[in-house]
Length: 387
Image 1: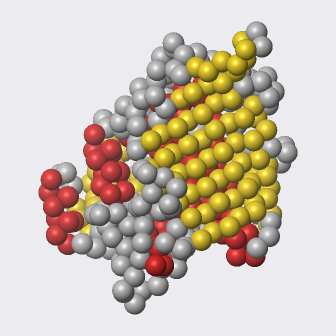
Image 2: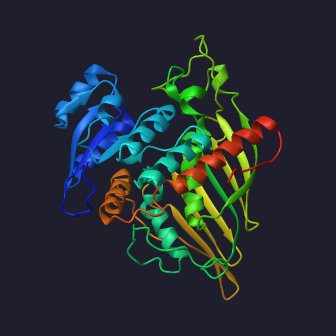
Image 3: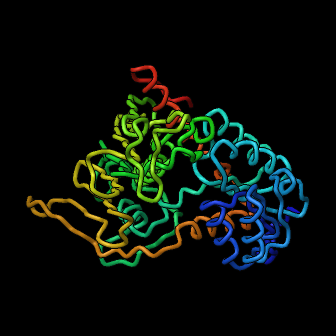
């Protein structure tokens, strides 16, 4: 297989997965120039034929192994249940292909480490679809915390600079943060792979919480989490409550609800700061769906609050001006296409030929944190995060 970094060469992609994630990846790659999706794999025959035909993909496979075995692919894109991320990614990386993987990286930190090791061993890019950090409002806050963004500036959605030195940015030293993704009623159906620990690795913490953990760590300048103290519950899910009208939860089936429906964790960082992380698929505390990340700094604060996937009015800044508390709400508009932006960055990294720092390392740390949260909840006390 060719490994040239010629920026003009068409990159050939194989997509594994036919559900929401796989289709989103497929459409994002198909829409971009310099890319050709030449293979698609999935185990629903009718859906496979429909997608291959409608998206013009010439080769379709029932088994992912057949797709990965092709020697004319540059990239394998993974949009399947969490438990399959590891075997597909390792096989693709070991065969010299770059990998774009839906989040989380894997169901366990140990498996995530093996994926990163394979990427490093073969010097292939391993990117994870933490697409929400590419939202324009998140990028506005990232640039603001670098000291380079004001309320009237255009939003720079690239991610090519370090955050300000701790204590020197617009809000000073961030000593505590809160990050949450909370739903009133959104437990996936009881027959979904999402509610099975073996296939999913966990419930809303690994599903939704990993996104807001990623946003918080990104905004805080990638601090290292050293300990986690956590609790998890599944009061609503195991009773058959908390589903949506479209996807109800049934308590009458013989299949157990063996993941959490609510998780809460206090994370401590190496520098002494902290983060309260919460995630729920259902709780009697909301009337909708809220995504929130709030940073408390020594000289100011910042809040991202997204109600029902809102695309405006989501950013609030707190400060003092001449000793008077001041609140600013920048007018940031959030266009669609977060998956496409992360894939654009992924392709640019491949084409650059400079892969250092792009072997999945940051996603590995998130997987280690999720591991520690689940371990703490099970043990009933604070645990250390594996490094």
